[in-house]
Image (cartoon, rainbow, N blue to C red; front, side):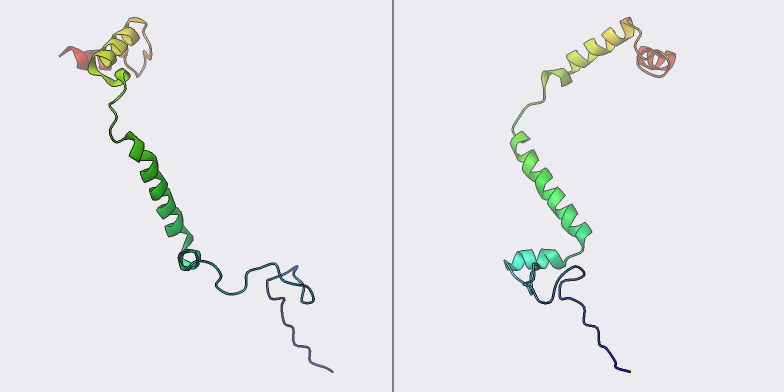
Length: 103
């Protein structure tokens, strides 16, 4: 009986030994890309999300709040909702909400 030593293909199943490989052999690319590829995926994803949130927040730093968040507008909105009896069970028109506003 002959012993056969199985050597798997270099880049996993469905790759061939007699054709050029499609994978990347070794650490190819910038050093920071190689370091990121070796980090745990959770840290990389959280880092990129934090970076993108920071980039998205930068344009909003010097702006004022919209007029719909002014105290006068919110008071008028609450009065309108009470007048039209919106959310009568648990919302702005409920007995508890009206009692807390009357003190």
